[in-house]
Image (cartoon, rainbow, N blue to C red; front, side, top):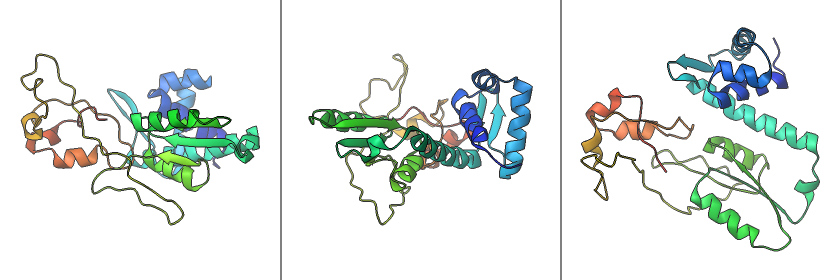
Length: 225
């Protein structure tokens, strides 16, 4: 089987829905038909893209790579189909970014420039954002990486550190550590954690690696900013 654009859009629909049932409704097919199509796509790619669990369906590590490249391809195709007038306009600025206050502040400053047309595209994967920047999908992008897991910087990309943000943990109001300004990681090693999904740039692997002892027994770490 040869992959087509519709197959790539199917993969993105499944990733966005987090459920084969919801994805099937979104693309207008039955769940068995979508499941069969996914199996054919995975066979063509030579690896498992999604893994099912009691929480739904989520990309495998290989799937994270596939989805990030798929989104890059589809964005390029969509730009080609919609024309290049905005891209060629001298007053047009295309910004990509990981949704953080840094991106919000940058966009706000650009909106203050008179006569400038701004488009903003957000993605969860910093690697995908970097790929899109390199392929000229953006004029600039705000990215996220982690100590010891810095993003590789291509020779034709100039990168500057804008801010360093700590990892934050959300605790119930009555938790024994909730009143502390800083929470020692070791104090939470035996707690149950809820985790944001892997972003392909080192999270949550970096956190789990540094989690003392019992933290590795749970699916992952806390909410982070």
